[in-house]
Every structure is written in C-alpha cells, then in structure tokens.
Image 1 (cartoon, rainbow, N blue to C red):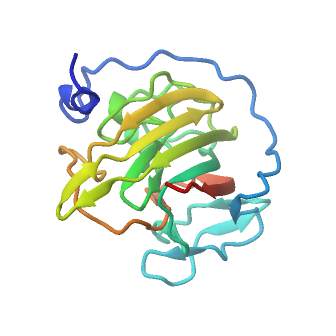
Image 2: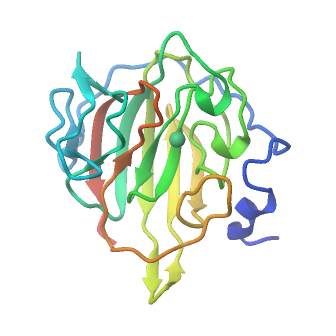
Length: 234
Ligand code: MG
C-alpha cells in the first residue's frame, strides 16, 4: 500500500480523468447553534473587527443581515490573530442564481494558516476537476463524497487541522486535516502535501508555528457566517 502522502500524488494535479466523488444528500440547511464556551468567535454576523486585508488595512468585505460577503476588488481577508492547530467552524453560501462553470462558479476558499486551502466552490451540479471541487484540499485531495447543498443554501465546514512542523527548511510532520461538510465526513485525517498552489505539485516551505486564517477573494460574491475556532494545544 502506498503511504498516504502518495495518494494525493498519484493523479496529475487537476486531472479531469480523476473520478469525481459520489454525491451524498446532506439534508436541509440548519440555523447556526451557539459556539462552545471556549471558542474564539471570529465573526458573529455584526462586524469585521477580527479581520484585516492582506495588507493589514481594515477588511473591505460587505457585512449585512448577519453575514459577510466577498466584495469586488477587496481582496482576500485574514484574521488578526494567528493560529496553529485548530477546530474551525465556518458556514458559507454561494450566489443565486449560479453563474459560470467549473472553477468560475462560486469559488472562494478557507486557507488554514494562510497556505492550506480547503476549497469553497458551488459543487452542486457543477463539474470540475476532483481535486478542486468543494471540500477538496485544493490541488491535492478530493473530498470522500460530494455533500454539497444547492447555491444560496447555507453550508457548514467543521475542520480539525494540525499544523506542519519543520526542521530547518525541511518538513518534519506534514499538516493534517479532517473536514465535515454539512455534517458529512469528507476529509479523514488527510495529509496535506504542501502549500496550496494552482496547477503544480505542492511542496512545503517553512513558516511560523502560528499564522492567520485566510478567506479567499476569487472574484465571486460568496457569503460567510458563524465563524469560530477552538485553539488546540499540541
Ligand atoms: Mg478557491
């Protein structure tokens, strides 16, 4: 059996021949529930005080009706705080009506430690390469199943992330991620093979033990709400 690190590497990056995961109906959207008592609330629907642009200026996304939305030209945003190992809850919704095809339909992303993307995409009846659909570790590992809800409906990610460690310039322990999409297991302690890149093999570069969480502006008005993390002690 190949080591888990090889699994993500067996297929060419973004191969359209890679099988698409089976579709699982996750059930209807649900209202958010209050976070646990030790959670750090990063967005409670009111303001972007915990967020900054990548340049460190105030985050330029729109806040209305309890959610934040990617604003045209505002760029990706990141948390003011840095995180390492986390449990993360985040909810998102893609635009209605759906526009565009493949990667051009409802694209955003949750970047753990700024460098490791769990893809956000409208993957409801929208085909794209398997390692780039919703809940993929982008460019590396497709989700186990496609548990997407239709555009406009709120979807949840519950993520457990363990950061990589480095010895000098070399990675010692790869990062690992578990993801539940709408309550359905889609990444099961998946080994992350390096920094997220487009169109080429990922590889690691060393970075600090804690870095901001980033949400991607891919030019589409994706909405987010109910974002909280629990800091996990290594
Ligand atoms: Mg993306």
